[in-house]
Length: 288
Image (cartoon, rainbow, N blue to C red):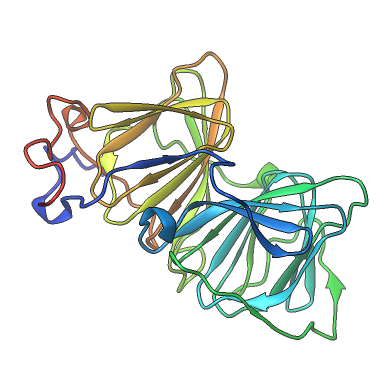
């Protein structure tokens, strides 16, 4: 049964931070290992809570050796092809394929091409993630090209065959990971495609969100403030901020979204809440 929009967000989710729009290349890239760099777009540096996202570039034949994180990680291929090893199971992923790796699961990644870079979108369920290198598994095996992972461990979403659903008029969404798909995971996220005119309803979340625009031009409306985003620009939407995305262009638009919460809950509110006049927090936009 469809739930009617709330007239406004409840007072207990009053936000204590403004949205932040982040453009790739604004900050110096971090070298993870030789040949592998991270452009961190959302994380502790801009006061995100419970999430880090950014773009990882692999030079030809670069390797990020086996390691673990104390939180879950998601990787989506934006360009090129990457090999992901998880406990010796090796998956080849192409553009817009995704793999999510639960916490403390040993994994590695490498660019097998001698000529082409690989660019990935990465997300971790912490605003200050840690990496611990571990020994390479002795048993290795190539996984089938249609493999979707191992139950209770890594989950792979193949873009061409993934189930889709409509999250708003003129949209097509894919869930990559959440608590229902990967029990025990701390975050949720996926891919969204918007036809010209496609949009989401005005909504808020009870956790922070990162949204990376990977195709076309998006309009991000936040309580009457409008931001235009493209070319992997990434928005940090803090908990409680009322917002929506719309494609006001004449070409398709697509995004990768990650929530700092295990279930992909969009709490829909009256559209007026996303306007200057109806902004529910306008009388006190930030706590004093």
